[in-house]
Image (cartoon, rainbow, N blue to C red):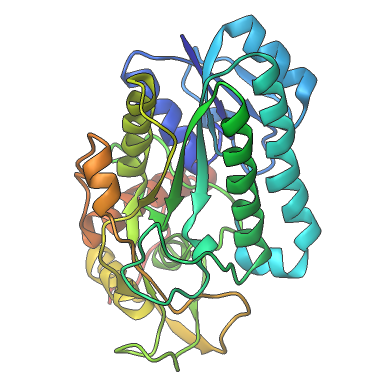
Length: 337
């Protein structure tokens, strides 16, 4: 039995592939390398460079490798970009998944795990946010993911397919052994930017919005370590293989940190100055997003092991320093905090 991982050369997808390989699974990857890197795919794992929406490619991979499950990561993920270019997101996220599902149905793939997002909730009416909360996305990114969730539900209701939708909150960190991590140039993740400042690659970090009705005026996020998230996917796959019915689950830790608290954690871990520049709010940003994780705890055999902001920051820093050395030969002399 083989698992197809779309976007498996990207940040989260590569951690998923590594976790599957370490568990002895047969894995194959499709990635167009628009934001991923072939070097992130473990040696021996077949990598097909192409689009997950290319039905001929997907059909051939499923047939050639005996794929019985798909874990779908491929897509675009930057909220401000989705506001500027919504059609890009409806193409890369919604239309691509439609084509992927069509190929999967034709080949009889019966298990599908979808990488969704807490952005489907928009600005939530209650926090922590349960899976039963109203979905009202405030960005095309969130809308494109919600459209895909609806499509997946409708497809599974008339075909022999069961699925798990995993709604990520804020994914951060890197492989604890610094083998892989977030390597995309120009990344917009808060912790990634903070690490680039800590390693001298950026002069400062912009904080968008300091007038939110939160304790320190900045947005609050529920961070989940990418390695824990990968294990949640492994547990979701085991759940489906055991005959579990289709379900939607939040992926977070159930508690949040503000933007300023997160930057301060990076200062503590790195021992370096992290200059901050305050800027106005950005369109599409959500004030507070913390997961209600009761359902995933009772549904999946999953216990997080990296539920600590400083641990997440330390792993992200170790990866960033390694990445910088590989790209530039050495880590610059850094100024202590």
